Every structure is written in structure tokens, then in C-alpha cells.
Length: 358
Image (tube, rainbow, N blue to C red):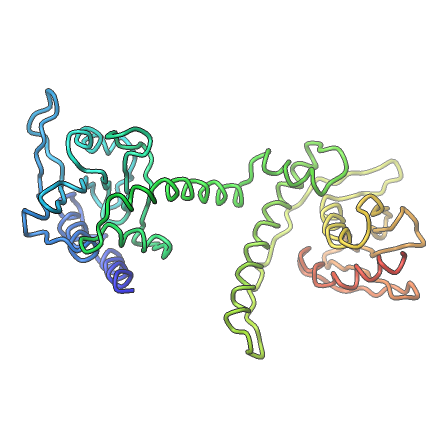
């Protein structure tokens, strides 16, 4: 917790001062040196621990300098290359780190702009710095899962073998997390097809793929909210009112309608509503038994394509959306909904209705 406190203190300093920092040297003084000193625990004024402007001749390259070399037991352990605050970091900025890495004993190198720290080692080839970092830290968005790994780099607990052994897992977990985040926010076609093929029995036409792109994003968001809700409920078990994540109000974009020969218009929002209902009741009946029929006044969801087995009706032909539910006498009651996800509030009723026909 002490280390996290130091990181948060430095984060606050960046928020206050970043706007007035105009040079790389100012970045080093204001942010990087405090990180090396306060976070990693090395004395920046002791050249046996931290050597600024470290010179290491490489081939025909003479007199080039690396910003900092961090030593322990008189051996270089970490190389640090700095850029100005706000400057983007990429492999091109790490050219000197690449050159120096294989001619020193260092197994760890850091590329930073004072806010973002990228940590590298030599997982891919011995004594050759990897092109991708095994760990990243953003001081304006601190991931507390990263803090224990930063602790392994501190002077008091520095253990290069432990760091390198953990680096492989960290590197790939980090990359997988980025891919998951990307797919959740902007799913690729293969990602959408993976889920659509498991819940949709029809042909995956272009229009269906577009629909399931929206549904996949929505389902991913709901799943994440569900996970947060479960943790909150566990944390406050025993309280009278469990916390809940309020769903964001969603704007239903205009969708291209499909018109049949009878002049009945089946809209994408009706199809999307149908798939929500199907996803609910497929847990109690075979998915192939769930069908729909559209009319000019409502969109009906049926069991066995039988009008005598109505599951619900979707009244989406007006500004106020309604879902019509049936009681045991097949009397319909309409319930207003604001967004399609509100259908899930009636999940138990829908499942009971479907089960009743069995």
C-alpha cells in the first residue's frame, strides 16, 4: 500500500504540473527522477546507484548516452530512456535501449515519458530487448494489478530472475487484455460470427452480421456490468439494498426496415427484440421451437409457430415501446419499456409462459 501511495502522489503531481513541462529535461527532473527515487527506491544522487547520462560505446557509435542506468551490487540492472511528457512512446523511441541492452548486464529496460512507463526484457531472444513491453504503467490511470509487479523492481526486493520469469505471463496477459477490450468495444467479424453461430439458427447474411455486431457489443457490456454487480453484492452482503449498476440509456438508431409482400414492415429493432426473448426462453425450451410472426399492429413471438402458443408481443410501431405478456388465460397485458434491455426484467414471466405450453 505504501508503493501505491507513492504512485498516487506522483500521479497527482503530473496532473498539476504536466501542462507547464515543455522539455525532456524538465520531464526527467519533475517526474522521472521522483519515480526512480520514491517508487523504485534508488538514490538518484548516488552515482553507484543511479548514473545519469550513462555512456556505452556500441560498435561505431561512440559517446552516445542513455538517460539513466540503475545499478545494484555495482552491476547495471535497469536502463531508462526518457521522452518529454505527452510524447507518444513506440519502438522507434527505444533505439538506444536496443543498442545498449545487449552490451550491458541489464535484463530490464524502461521507456517513459514521465506518465507512461513501458518495461522490457529479453524473452524472445537472449540479450536482445523485446519489441513489446511485458508491463505498462500509466500514472494517470493506475492499474492496481500492476503494482505488485512494480514492487519486484524496487531496490529492496529486486530479483531479476523472479521478474523475468513472471514477465512472459505478464506480457501475454497484457496483450490478451488489450485484444478483449478491443473486441468488446469494436468486435471484428470473426468475433461476432463466433457468438452468432451459437445462438442464431439461420443463415448469417450481411444484415444479420450487422445486427449481431450490435448485439455482441451490448451483451459484452451487460456481462461486464453483471460481473461488477456480483462483486458489489458480495461486498455488501447483509445490507438491505444491494448496489446496482444503472444501465446507460441507449439510443436506438434508425434501422433499415424489411417489407414483405403484404405491406408488413419487419424492422431490425423487432428482430433484435425477438433474439432477446429467444435468448431468455431458450433455457427452458428448444431454440428451434421459438419463432415469430409479424403483423401490421404487433410483432408476435410464438412457440412451435402456433398462434395458440403466444410467448409475447412486441409493440414497437410507435414512439413508446411496449412488450405484451400473457397470463394463464392468454390475456395480454402491455408493459412499457425504455430500451430493449428492459425486456430482461420480464425474463421469469417469459420463461413461465413458455414452460406452460409444455
